[in-house]
Length: 114
Image (cartoon, rainbow, N blue to C red; front, side, top):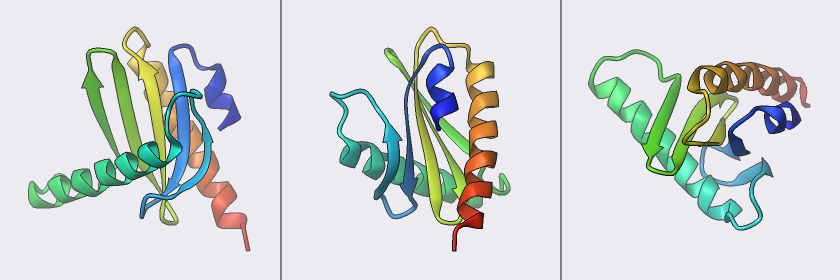
């Protein structure tokens, strides 16, 4: 997750459990870890249901766009979710690329744990 801190426009990231508990984070000090964890788990739960109901295949990533920025969430397997906060002027292609790379790294690291 440290690599994500160097991505231009990325404001924070969090690794959470699929049931909404914080595992690790690099968030702005004013942001509640508990709130990010709960909202991230809810985002993925709803997105998975939408994909299933609309026959869109296996869930990969969801993005919410607001006037002040983006919230992205991706299920990295092993009951873990990566949540990323990005500014409105960030380059989404770069953010998607870095999130995918970070998710692959985190999946590998988590699968190696006993």
